[in-house]
Amino acid sequence: MPYRITALTDPESTASSHRLAWLASDGDGAPAGSAFLRLFVKEGQEHLAELEMAVHRCERRRGVGTRLLEAAVAAARREGRRSLIAQTEGDSPGGHFLAAHGFRAVLALTYARLPLADADLDRIDGIVQQPHPGYRLIQWEGTVPPELARTFAASRRAMDDMPMDGTDYGTVVWDVDRVLSAADVIAERGELLHTVAVVDTADGSVVGFSELVVPGDGRGDGQHYGTGVLPEHRGHGPGLWMKAESVRRARERHPELGGLLTDTADSNTHMRGINDVLGYLPTHAAVEYQLDL
Image 1: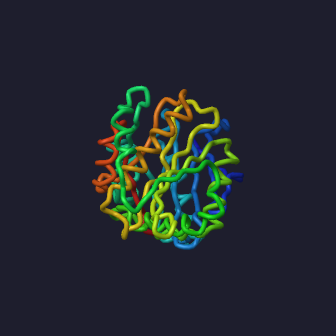
Image 2 (image 1 turned 90 degrees about the vertical axis):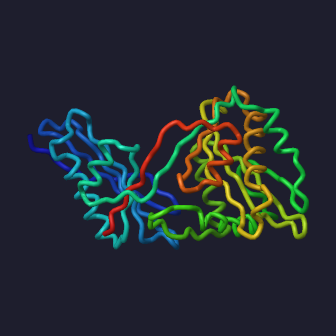
Image 3 (image 1 turned 45 degrees about the vertical axis):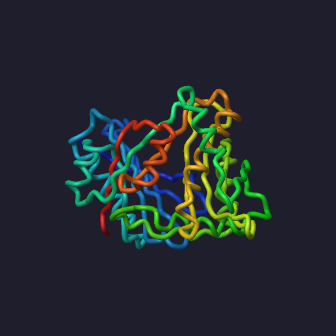
């Protein structure tokens, strides 16, 4: 049966990326699969594209995925991209498909969830209450307060050395405008951004942060967006301190929230240890694949 690949217009666009899309349909016009190619446009990631692809179970092994992939790869090359990444669950048909088409596995990830109803809140409270001389915790909802914006943006370099193994992810360049734009995007989706940060009491600067995004109705699961501490301030336990406060705050502010989700590179043993201490339970594994263009 012949399949048709149709390029679509995708309205989803942000200050940091935009997407191209394709639909595969059979001879009768019924959808058989789709592909989305995210093109990153911010400084430090202009070389990168990300692929998300799905083929209907009944249409697999008929060349649909290959044709969608060919369209996406051709577009990525036209856009001057150096690397194309895609994620699948561990040891899945999707992973075998990518490997057969020249992708290589570059990063192993573990996804985990903290069921808030089962969280050891006494233990978490104890972690939050431990003193950290020279530092204090602060928090805000939504956009960062103006007086903290500059040092908060500067603290984002804490993620520059996050373990990414062989992934050609680049270095994300953050400034105040990008911080504000990211918060606006979350608000426009109707979600709530909660940030816990550590401040150096010597100069009032932000030296670490932990971000959590919660559904607007306060139900379902929240998603951790990142936890990082500037290298010169590590070794004092601020990562665990912030994430524990983020959990405590979520439980307090959103009593109907079911759980908190996080994903961590398997090689990031420090953050995986923090998740274990707080009671996060692994839900599934995933693998990041990369095609060098």
